[in-house]
Length: 138
Image 1: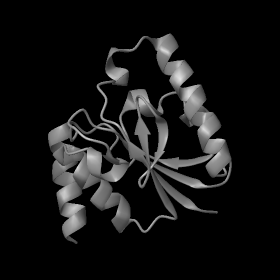
Image 2: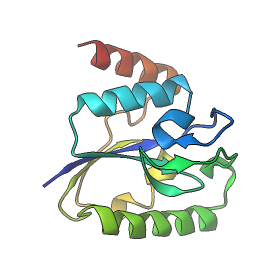
Image 3: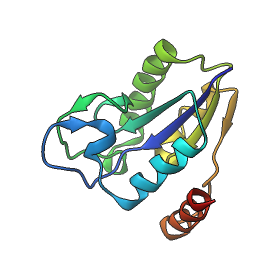
């Protein structure tokens, strides 16, 4: 069983083609990535509103897309695409999946997963940042 961390993308981005791990510049994304690395997972992926499941090293163009302004039908379709990408890279029935992602990004993925956790569930952005800072500094 592998440990996989899924991080939400961020609206603040560099304005040039970069590796996925470098293009997102929001404090929440940076703290999520640092925390994810501290969990010592087998793999970390970014859940991107445009690209779906992203490897940290994949070079991507900047974009302006979010699930926050998509319909439920569009979010379900995005989730199906992400599930298909996940099935090619991880064992969704057995691997441990840790979500550092908002409700819209995980809502339709969770029913297909057996082992998952959501450490920041129910926390607003300020409390998430506070929790992440504390955990990273340990």
